[in-house]
Amino acid sequence: MNGSDYINIVSNMIKEAYETQTEQIKAAAKALAETVEAKNNVFVFGCSHAGIIAEELFYRTGGLAVINPIFFPGMMLNTRPITMTSSLERLAGLGKTIFEKNSVKSGDLLILHSVSGRNAVPVEMALCAKENGVKTVCLTNLSYSRSVTPRHPCGKRLFEVCDIVIDNKGEPGDAAVRIEGLPEKTGPTSTAVGAAIMNALTVDAINVMIEDGFVPPILMSANLDGGDEHNDKIFAEYKDNIFYM
Image (cartoon, rainbow, N blue to C red):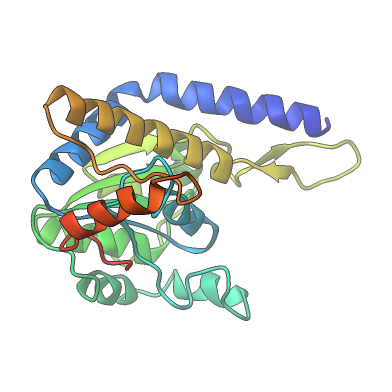
């Protein structure tokens, strides 16, 4: 298998994920739209490479201005040594601290991305959300997650503690390409699939807002004429719902 096979695998995986998870994606889109319309807050979090989806969704051309990333030192890819991220995401108690220090309140929406869904931090954040009246959406890999043991003391994985669960339809271990003579698989898929699914979900949420007669706060490219002025108006209107400025 080669790079062309990888492109086909990812393309098919995106298609399968969207088509088989339509009901869950529509439910998440409705929850996102309702949260924005109510002027409540939206947060997104992931550890290490899972956090790339948080980077993709916030302050994004064509995206919703009110999606707030949770970036925690030690969980991001600029952490050194990078292996620290693997240690910290397994640490029970840390998820509660992250949740409590990020202004998440009842009525808000928390989107969690974890491919394996087994580590303590995202599971604990979902548990804290439930205790505080915060709705949760998780993007995970169900076949992967069901094949591994949980690392949080509660004994549950992320898909077992979230309100809406979206399966990225990936493979256990994330990488999907086998090359003859190489024992390990290559070609990780979760970032490409996750970005496509979450952007599609956002488009669906925007459609819900339009159907409800609500003007969605969509960012324009700052490199288009009028983009800065358009965005400044949104930042002013939604200043109480934006935490990354």
